[in-house]
Every structure is written in structure tokens, then in C-alpha cells.
Amino acid sequence: MSWCPNCYTEYMDSKKMCSDCKVELQNEIEIEIERYEFVEMDYVYTAASDIEANMFTELFETNGIQTMKKYREAGGYLSVYMGETSFGIDLFVDKEKRSLAIEILKPLELESIEEDTKTEKSSSWLKKIFIIFCVILFLLL
Image (cartoon, rainbow, N blue to C red; front, side):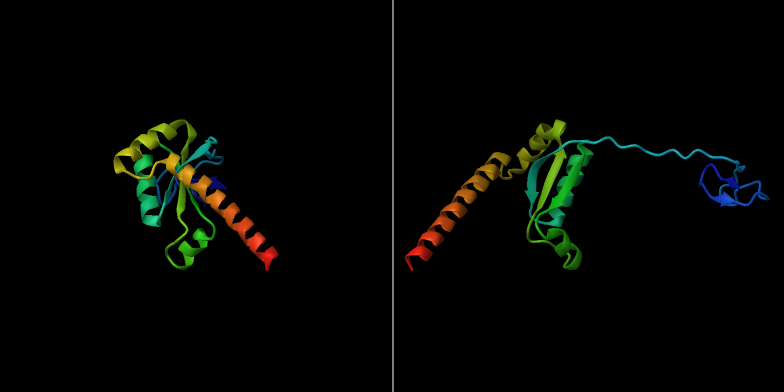
């Protein structure tokens, strides 16, 4: 079998030129495979919608920061079936360039990451207190 070195199309041995590329065919061809490096990601921000997440992803990637979106809970399914999610989308960036990503977000006057972690800690305390309260109330009744 003969192969086109441009479009990687396979031809019968009787053919000498690629009909699409007009290039001489080769008997053996080496296909180059792109290799990707593993990049550690770190949380930066939670976007409220797909539109906001896409805007931040583009903003980070135009500044050379690799970005990953992760839907919360069933948000991925909701965005497929309903076109939107109400759970939020967590944005992660390259761990080495996280400080640059935070600097990009600062002029936008968004809630800072430190405030997000504080609210998560305070909400976990509220949940624990609520559970304890419910257990005590259940035992008293």
C-alpha cells in the first residue's frame, strides 16, 4: 500500500500520485504524534455560567495560561440537556502561572480567592451547627 505524506490517505500500489494533494506517494510513512506534558492545575475562580467561564478561559489562554473548566455537581449534564448550569463552573489554571491569573482577575473586581475559601469554611461550620441542632431537636422530641 502507498501513502500520501501530506494527508495520510492510503492508496493502492498502482497509484503514484495523491489525487488530493498532487504529491508523490510513499511506501512507508512516519506519523508524528503530538505529546502533551502533564500540567498541575490549581483552582482560581468559580464562574456562574458557561458564558462567563468561556470568557475567562479565553482571557487566560490569550495570556499563555493553560486553563481547565470543571462543572460542579451535575452541571455538566445540565449544560448538555438544558444549555446552562446553575451549579457554577470551577476554573483551574497552570499552578506555575496562578499568580498571573489572579493578577488578570484583580482589575475585574471579582470576589478574591481568599474570600471564597473563607466563605467555604464558614459555610461548613454552619452546616455542622445545623446538623448538631437538628440532632438535639430530634432527641428532645
